[in-house]
Length: 241
Image (cartoon, rainbow, N blue to C red; front, top):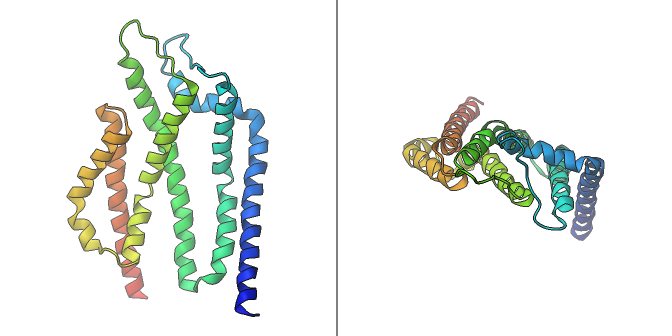
C-alpha cells in the first residue's frame, strides 16, 4: 500500500471514529432529553437547599426555561458518553504507538478522566453547599436571593471546570517529568511557589469567602504532592526495569 493510500485509509478511519463519537453523544442526549428539567433541578439542588423557605430560581428570558435545561442535558450526555468517546479515540491512536507508549498512555487517559470527574463531584457535594450557604447567608436584610437559571448554570460550569482541571494536576506533573521537561527535584524546590499560586487560583475562581478558597487551594497543593510522589515512583520502577 502506497503512502497516499495509507494516508487516505487513516483519514477514513478518523472519520468513522469521529462519527461513532457523535452518534454515541447524540444517542445519550436523546435518552436524557426527556429528563432535562429533572437534571437541572438536581444541578440546582445545592443552591435551592440553602435558600429561605419559598425561595426559588427565576428565568429572565423567554427561551431560558427551555434552552437551559437542554444545555444541562447536553453536558450530562458529554460526561456519560465520555468512556465511549475515549474508547474510540484510543482505538484510533493505539495502533500507532509502541508497546511501552500504550502502557503509559492508556492508564494516563483513564486516570485523567477519573480525576476530572472526581473534581466535579468534589465541587458538587462539598464546595457548592459551602459557597451557596455563604452567598445566601451574606445577603442584606430584605433582599430575596433569586438567581437566574442561566446565570446559575454558567457559574456552576465555571466551578466544575476549575475543580475538574485542578484535579488533573497529578497527571500534568507526571507527564512533565516523564517527558524530561522538569525533574522531581525541581518540582520539590518550587513547592512554595506552587502553594502560593494555588491560593491565588482559589481566590480567582471561588467567591470571596476563605473556606471555599481553601477548598480549592488545599486540594491543588495535595494533588501536586501526589503527582510528585507518582513521578518519583514511576522513575524508580523504570530504573528497576
